[in-house]
Amino acid sequence: MSEAPEGWLTGAQADRLRARAAAAGDGTIVEIGSFRGRSTVVLAGAAAAGARVVAIDPHAGSDRGPQEIGADAVRGGADHEAFRANLAAAGVADRVRHVRKMSADALGDVEGPLALLRRWGARVAPGGAMLVHDSFSSIGVTGALLAECVARGGWRYAGRTGSLAEYERLAAPLRGRERARDAARQLAQLPWFARNVLFKVLVTARLRPVAHRLGLPAGMHWPY
Image (cartoon, rainbow, N blue to C red; front, top):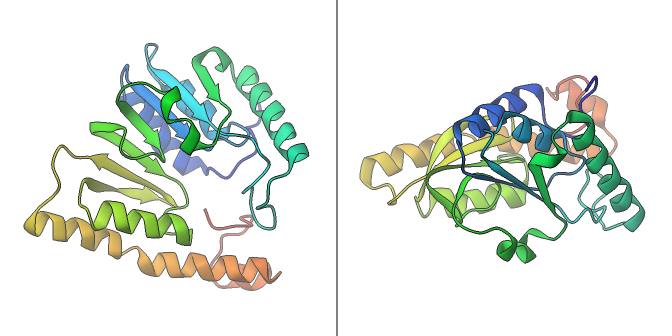
């Protein structure tokens, strides 16, 4: 495919997804939020021949970016058609099962433990990975990560590429100094989080040039 599908995944983030998908072996890979398939193509293309890739997205036309938060059936239909066309163009349509539902309604559509997840927690098997986009960038996502992955300690922070953070599911919660060190590594991302929130406020206020002068990369309309 000559051009990647529309979406917000950077090249470096795609490399991280590709590496984790290849390491998942024959396990199940679940993606929550596929939009037009940019990241889905990466996951399916890198997954082992025996792996299952499940993409969960209602394609409701909502939460697509700045000023496109509410549901819109026309936008959603266009996203769904583009998603299918992009998978076909990449030659991975037969490797992806699409569940067109909200993630909260799709729990029963995926059986067993998961080897790799882009945003769903309790179903990941120990040793599996969870990759979360908008980490330390979105207020809601960051709050959820702090509550689940810092306060409870059942995950080990493996680092981030931009706003794509990677976590390893643990068989038992971290304790003592190891837990404190892991928490400190995540809390150290909060200044970067504050920077991203500032960029979003400026972009929403139609002050994108100011955001770029303060450090938002050229050509990036929203911090990812």
